[in-house]
Image (cartoon, rainbow, N blue to C red; front, side):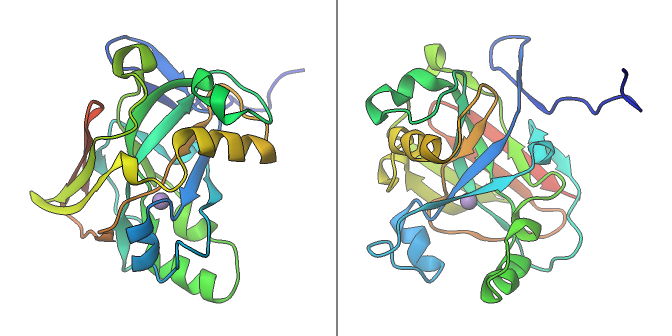
Length: 228
Ligand code: MN
């Protein structure tokens, strides 16, 4: 047997300090993992715990750069997030062992068509068209744990055309990286190549064509994206 046509390339993200690529299998995202952002979205972080949703693996835009402003939105919003790259799979992973499953970390953007998301949410419909679409997941180089350790505190921030819009600290996450891995692996068996976007701090907002986003996390470098 053979494929009817050439299979699509595997989405991949460069590994910092090497010529290796991290092959992306799936993308999971955590919603409302910072209390201040949950409140700015109209939710009560004391009453509603974080939750999961997905993006297609081919939504990856490795390294940022020039990205097409997407269709079907007039409210395209930035969400800077710590991205966890899974290197060893497993189901029902104990939080105490979760760090052993991490390959590395990166800075990422969970780009969101907020107007579509809000309209779908209001009707109780799936969010996908607001969250999962072409180039909706820019990601910077993945830093191996051996290089960056397990960042659990430090600034996470985003500027638009040089003006700071988002700033938080990794220590403010409601679910820690270990808790996220433990929770998610109760629902699905994690596998090497899975990426987890761990939620965004407060300050999300719209970006316009021609604007330049600069996202950064202490110890993980920067990610620059311009929407054209
Ligand atoms: Mn997000």
